[in-house]
Image 1: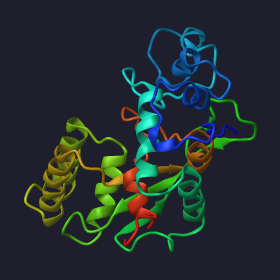
Image 2: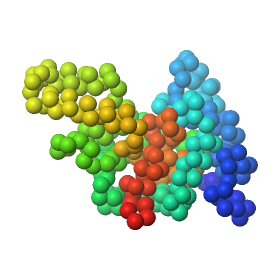
Image 3: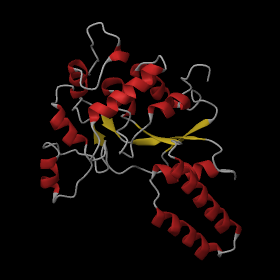
Image 4: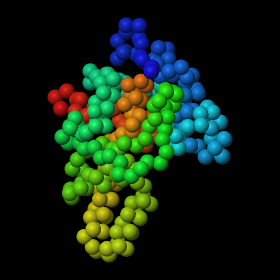
Amino acid sequence: MSKLKLSGRDPKLIRPDDPEFKAFVEGGIPIERLSKRLLPKLGVGDYDAETAVHDGWGDFSREGFMGVDDDPLIFIHADLMTVLSHDLTPQMVADRVKLSYEDDSHLHPDYEFMGVTTDTIGSQSCPWECPDIIGVDDGIIYRKNLLTRPGGSLYLALAMTSKLNEEGMAKWIKDSSLQFGPDHEYTTKARQDVEAIQALLASGEVYTARVTSMLAHEIEAHCLFGGGPGSPYRADPEFLINALNLRKHA
């Protein structure tokens, strides 16, 4: 398990290029190699070809821990600074994530946890090769009352977490129309939900976070909040601090 050691210095003053910070992020794996492991599937060929471009690491993530243009030193540093700005540590956030695995009583009342309702396909090991660490989807944390109708936030959370695209949204409305009719109340609500989701996505704010069984480990050992800004696994630290009721005077 990696631990950030700064020779007694204030961690709030470190820079992304600080040698001790870099050593913490690397966790024994050179940053150039680690970056390859964090990339999504690149579609370069068969499994062997993909493995080769992922540092020979065969358990690469299809969706990736970061986008192709992300830099782990930059986004892990930014996330660490966010946590420290709240007078918290990654360990404190990770401990509260562990509690969320058990129940949602530790969440802020404006947030809710929804466990996965179907078996997940496959699992994911830690890119740092930490032993006995396996990740599968546990569910999502989402902010309540984002859509006006009862249960609307649940649909929103599902849509936003799965990166529902324009084609998917159009299909959602089309399927409702075919099943119930274009003027049916359900179809109208589906159309309203899609419009609301599009507006929320365009705002750039964060309303959901995917929670995997590996998330707490990623945070406490590597200060990795599911992934970088380009990853669908990302659990934004500011969002988590609010949702996990860790913000002072929350």
